[in-house]
Image 1 (tube, rainbow, N blue to C red):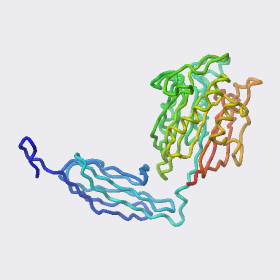
Image 2 (tube, helix red, strand yellow):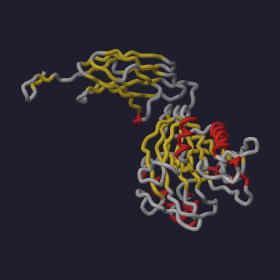
Image 3 (cartoon, rainbow, N blue to C red):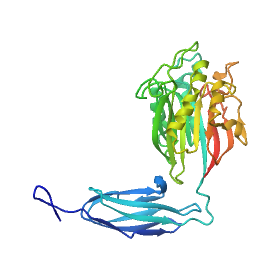
Image 4 (cartoon, rainbow, N blue to C red):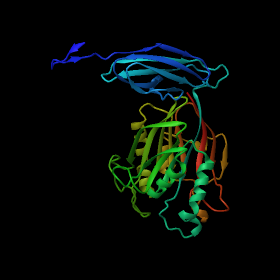
Length: 377
């Protein structure tokens, strides 16, 4: 016991967890941890390299005094042994920990291999007045929902997402996806005319969310896309996604790039600079979106100094040859949507421009695209 400065008695906080180590087998099993403490405490799972731990669950994450905690360890489907630490911390920071090591499965897959479907989809703003009633938001939104579901992206970038569409996406797809939206028309990055990143919540957790403007001042909102095609604000959003089961992390960036050709080329290097700024760990990197640039435009030349084009690298291509369909208008069909990638150990198995129609009608004026790929570390 310690005497406090006001003459009272202060009890030193103690905490002790046992056993110190748990050697878990390959199969699903539960293990008991005995905690002895005289204080309030919290329990946290920490993976190797601070990776997310999805293969262990704890019966309690906080409490006061002595307790018994059950650690449920799920089946290890991979060859590699994996390790996590349960860290118990009292109010004043006193800690005790238990290390859980789980055996690998002899016939399991390589834990350093991850198969993903990475895509991009320009949804077309719901606020646009269409010349054909078939293409109005009311009539095409059911087709768009089916299209997103059928493409079954693991992670994808979206462009032209109105406030109403943000709500629509969350209402219809929140059981499958989590969303990160960015509007370049607000310094706070919130509001209408947005772009976004969607990822399967069963597969990933998100961290390090950031956004910027494609201009000479990336941290400040600006009307940077000016010219004969109109005046707009353009930028990008990015994040780090951690695969729950393997702990593999990827850097993901999405944009709806400048429509006017001069700023489209002039500000392309901003995306390279922002990737370097926010991907400091040099994670496998993906840059997707509606680039508003043909393959021979200066912007694409700039992007290819840093990333590779998954369309060109794919072992197999399926679907169509152009991504912008203009709702079928003649003379407006070209490839302006991309999935760029960077990093060792990435193989593009297939690239698809999914030109499916629904009873002969379009879901958007762009076709969705995706790359089926493998990441090996």
